[in-house]
Image 1 (cartoon, rainbow over the protein chains, first blue to last red):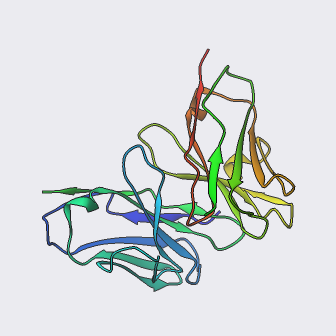
Image 2 (cartoon, chains in turn yellow, red):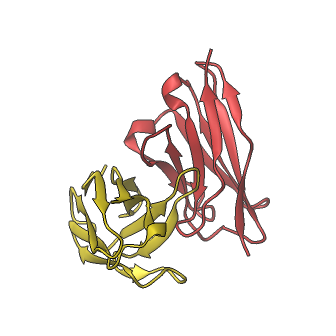
Length: 107
Length: 112
């Protein structure tokens, strides 16, 4: 199975800050990478698919980049409602796997 | 609009099995990959396996090989996840998902 190494595991930032999370795959996955946001007690919500495509309805402050083994997720200007845990998921078919998650808090 | 509606909470004894269902309400999912993902209390997301109903065959994460069976019934637009030989480590919320659409989650508690 492909291993996804996500960092950092937790992050504290101020409103308005630029926030970056990274995911590294153990092998080449092309652009088969999603980014999800999960709030407590809720199912994950898709934000970015195919590494860099913004899911319709998702604010443009969220973005993704990267390919092959190295990927980045960015929030350009952190908002209070962005407090959540974020996960990357690779789907280099047929098997998927998630990163360990990044818990994002407001300073 | 399609929704994924899962079966209700389960409480199981160690050594038993659990079967969770996931019905596509308001549409069909035959052409889409359906994944099963679980989340233990306070832990991250864990992909268990998936199926594309129109093809029928499932794929499983190595960790769950031999213990999980994922099936789909196209006639009822329902997917199923069957997990056997349960231990307390299997206590978790189990989700079905179609990337941009997730079920509400099914809590499974394994306790003697």
